[in-house]
Length: 197
Image (cartoon, rainbow, N blue to C red):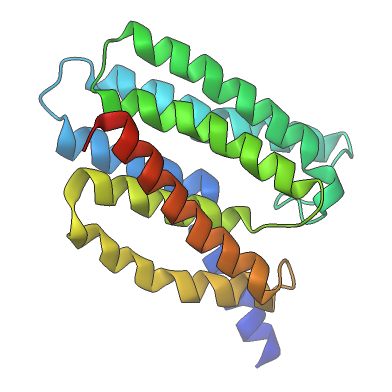
């Protein structure tokens, strides 16, 4: 029984992970929200590069060179360099996105990804906030800004993800709770201000 729970928790953590959740949200936002825009594929390429391609290449490289112990970067002390790199990646992505003259929401995603990664980085210096919960809830916030209250049904997955991260001993209850609450609240406030909604 413990083995089965371990497997279930592992699957949940990988399926609802930052490199899966964020690009999935971006695909939905771009294709359903701006599907008729001639630059839609270019928008997705920039967003995908910043949210998935760059992090996966970075984490794989750090794992191979022994700079991190596992792909989830379990140890707080090993998170500084990857987070700093992601700040730079999102800033570059923001500059690329601006050249495409996209809907304002899309530049806001990259800008506030950079800002929020700095926020996470500063917290990480002293405390291990759950990045899984932060990214998931902030992705739900993006969908909420774009599509309204129907997106809030996805928040039902928050307790499931919290259980997974706690069961795997990656975080305690407060680390997951703060990650989820702050991730959603901060992104909603930032994007409402940025888009003028």
